[in-house]
Image (tube, rainbow, N blue to C red; front, side):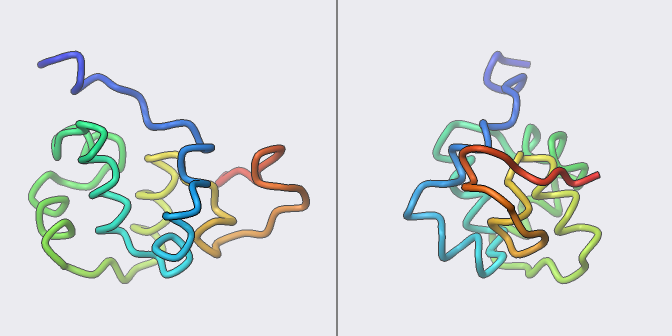
Length: 103
C-alpha cells in the first residue's frame, strides 16, 4: 500500500469549488469520484472511504447511477462532502463557516 492509498478524505472546503457546484447539486457521484481520481485517490481508497466495494466504485465511475439515499449518504459522508452541497441538509451559515453533520 502506498502513501496515496492512506490519504484521508479531502477537507470539506475542497468541495466548495465553483466548478463542483452543479455536479454536487445534481448528486453526480461519478463526478465526485473523478475529482478524487484527479487527486490521485485510487479506487480502493475511494472504496475504503465510502464503504462501497471497489467493483461498485469502478461501476459508478463508468456511469452506474447511485439511487439509494443510504448509499448517497455513505458516499458523501465518507469523502467529506458537506450535506448541504448535495441537498441532503440545510446550512445556517456559509459553508466555509459551519456544516451540519451527517449524524
